[in-house]
Image (cartoon, rainbow, N blue to C red; front, side, top):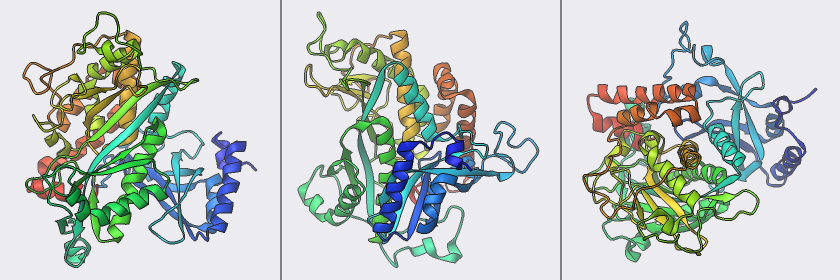
Length: 494
């Protein structure tokens, strides 16, 4: 009798070999528990924990998963009325909170460094009939990458992630674990700073914050993540982690695992890490997620944005002074669809407070040559092999699969239509440019009005995504205390 993984068409000889290796690692490593993890719409890892003896069989036959996990808004409320007639009419297979099956990739096996005798594997959900769950965001990126591959291209991405780390004060949780204060969502812990801020890259502040940063370092390296540096950012308690470039799917997987892992490891040591863009305190600095990207030749791996010398007759403000013709088309595609992609890059209400002038964050749909005020920053010199485009629109809470997929679809549209980029800006905060959306609602409107992105993601996915994010907006609008709403919704959980 064939396994469910075989029925789904994903179990082949390499997967069987990986499964045998994972089974051996579980036995040799004294593993007692294996976490089967999956990334939800909001970029958060969820899943089930199995005893070690059940893990190998579950990688063949799947783990049951309630389908409403794909229908949750950011507070964990189900945004579709699945028990009402027609409540999930647009989502066949999701009626009545029916079951999905989570199939984990045995090659993703990792021994978690912060908890004893525990391993981790990454999975994706499948329908009970063996068909793919098309709403799964990792699958959304896989489809985008397949489309890119059909054109002969691969994608490389480097991550720069700003976030905040605080020391938990008091009894370690204050009201967070007090049953009398339990709510949906509950209060966050009470915290103190790990450094006072406003001294960018200060060696003294790094020394002050070294204990939690060492935890971040050791956790990332033990998981095999390509960490390059840890830095003191400008804001109080704000830090940054920079990672070497990898292929796009690996970069997205790494982002999901990094966020979840450092939050858990730091919490055990008495710290609260948050990837909320603007934590709920006065005098903080917004955190961004700067995504470095380039296209590469699928066969040779050559950087397709690179040029050996400026195009004849170009000036430094011309795109082809630095980028290849393909790179210019891709850049122009990102500009063309900037407003539409914003909801994927900055998907929280809180994140839009970052788009303000003179804050090292974008405000307008512009590109610049090594200009950190522009939305898109073209980095590199002719012949240096590292030419790339940095998109500075993202917040660290973004779902990485959707963020990266939006880049691919926008860039491919620019390539297909051979779009031309305007001249680089020297005034990123000027008044003349098209502005980015200033709220999540406006960003969703822009997304729904972007025909190319709707076609690329599929109208059913766009409708699904919009409905869940509108639930978030509605609850925020109805909140009596909107600052407290953000503390509970974002700071406590993201």
